[in-house]
Image (cartoon, rainbow, N blue to C red):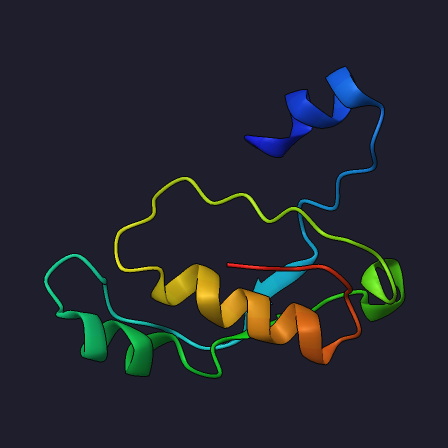
Length: 87
């Protein structure tokens, strides 16, 4: 939802459902940095890999604490062929 207004302002495409959580993960709030990484490992997949293949991607998340969730999402994007994604 945060990306939609940015997409409208810039004219760039937005793929709000481009990543999907494929397994339950416990709340990250009470966990330490290492636990957070383990908690989200393998928890996401690309819904439409062709939409990101070879493209630079701006990943927007509403909360950034340890970076574990966004880092895992970057791994999935890179594995799917996205170019220029960084954490």
